[in-house]
Image (cartoon, rainbow, N blue to C red):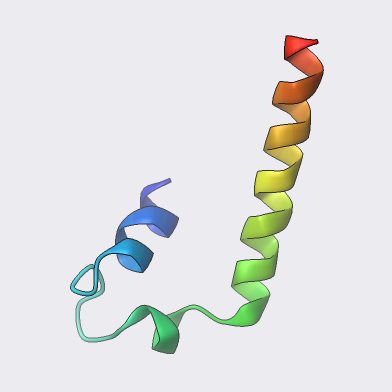
Length: 47
């Protein structure tokens, strides 16, 4: 979670850059897809 959480949450989390300059739409889409799969897995387990 650190690679996604710290740099995107804190402006000084990326040395020499800001999140908007480092993270592209492709990476964001991939992160959303992973999170969706994790949520689906958890929902299956708690039913």
